[in-house]
Image (cartoon, rainbow, N blue to C red):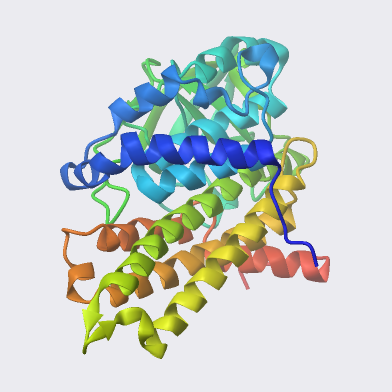
Amino acid sequence: MAAFRLDPDLESFRHEVRKLAEREFAPRAAAWDEQERFPEDNRRLLAELGYFGLLIPAAYGGAGAPIIQSSIFVEEIARCCFNTATVCQIALHGPARAIAIMGTDAQKQRWLPAAAAGEALFAISISESHAGSAITELRTRATPVAGGYVIEGAKCFTTLAAVATHFLVFVRFGDTQGARGIGAVVIARENPGLAIGKPDPKMGGRGAPESPVFLDRCFVPADDVLIRGSENSSESFRVLMEAFGPERCGNAAICVGIAQGAYDAARTYAAERVQFGRPLMEFQGIQWKIADMATQIHAARMLVYRAASNEKNGFPDAREVAMAKLYANEMVQRVTSEALQIHGHYGYTRTLPLERMYRDGRGYAVGGGTTEILRNTIAAMEFGRSFDQRR
């Protein structure tokens, strides 16, 4: 049976990005985490090299590449530096991608060239203190006024809020409940009604700050509404959920990258470390760990590549991407834990990257849809019906 192979151009692209990440990002990955600093130097370099325009259509200054290429890109960056990969994830798979698919031509002309050039960085604000997984309970409201809408509400855990230039904010239009009426608007950082709170202290991803966003009578022109929620339909909410596809694909790819970096370190260590007169790799217990890690990484990568390759209307297949994220989110926890274990107490120290990889990978099982919510989503698709989680 013929083995699965990527297109040679994609393999060449992988090697190009891997060399860049190993040369430029790996040496300072620990520093961004220890100092809790945003990797601005890395962001600037990636912007200069044109990588932030990877998914943006050529008509708006980008490369118009497929999602599988951007997935490979963030995977290779995450293998060396999670915080830099998170910047790429937001820039590539977040709001700019949604604007490229759902925005009007005027919105694309206004926002996408700046995003492709790295001059604009769009964060996404969805979660609220009372509405995390239960996103349909969000309370941030858009009230119509002359020329647009006034936004009132508060968001939490907005990744890169501290450095973003624009925010894609999920809001509720009209006096609605549940999924009806939910839409999204774009708000510029300098809008006087928008304020950014202090970044939250985190277990991992400490160079990619998350902060609350406060909206106090924040006026948004009608032209800045990406999708208006209907009081009589949940269709706009369904469309917005489709926009999570690329983000979830990138999330899963980053998990593969973290796991690959941890596995590479563990495999090398097992071959070199001598205990009881022979290398660790000669002990069956270590061999089984390495075999399981390699298999799980490969399985997760294939799920990601399948989902990314089967994009339709600009977004990956919802079922396939949910499966990819679910498996990759749990796989990275197993693999980084085993890689740390193989290194013994050295792995537990901060002189090696294993403990950082373990911390960084853990958060992605929460962000972008928890593993529990993903299981609900997959089950609903398998049964062909939705289930009311409130009962």
